[in-house]
Image (cartoon, rainbow, N blue to C red):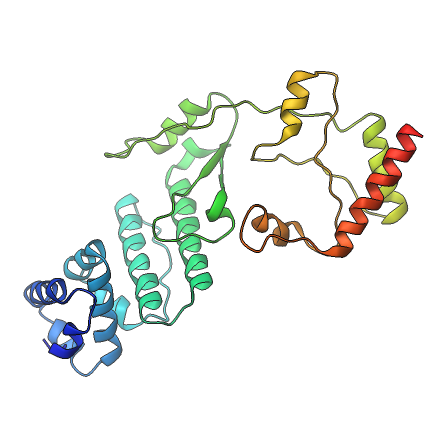
Length: 285
């Protein structure tokens, strides 16, 4: 193989690299030709083989792996075939992301976003493959997947939203799990406060004065909130999670909640404080 002994010896796992390169030479007749004279491809191959046994198996077993590693700037389109084709695309795209990471082409935040994009594409294509069984069922990415900050060992936390028996619908869509296990870790039923009444009117009135033309839209919070406990304990209680803001969008703020560099714009803090003051004064005198 045209990969030099020095490159192998300087890798993170010289023995594993030598074994995998020997297997690659046997499995892929064109490997020697493809690697010859392509320093970037050699560097990517050695990096991923040394870093991961699973990626090493992809390099050896998938005839398209060297093509992917030789063109790390090309992101192939997700497979629109069957589930096996989607699984293969996922392995090759993960290989490409890891190679870009290990060879220094991408920094940590970029790698996290690429891994999240990979998860998003797999979920989207899987939803499409489910066909009519998935009609009326929404799949919402939570946690680091929703914030586009995945790492290689991240779980992908999902929220399934639909009508009827959730367990039955999910089982119908997923079908045979092929060795995977599906668990339901959270089974707390949510509740809500109606968008009406004196508190609602006070909120909408404040916004009408401060930001004419703005609207108030109820949303579902896919996370824990004290408001649920208040409503469950005191059925007559109206509880809203209301923090008006104008300078940071929801898409900018939400991924920061309980995460690194959590922050809020000072102008939004002042705007919300003024809202609480004026609404409390209006309702309580």
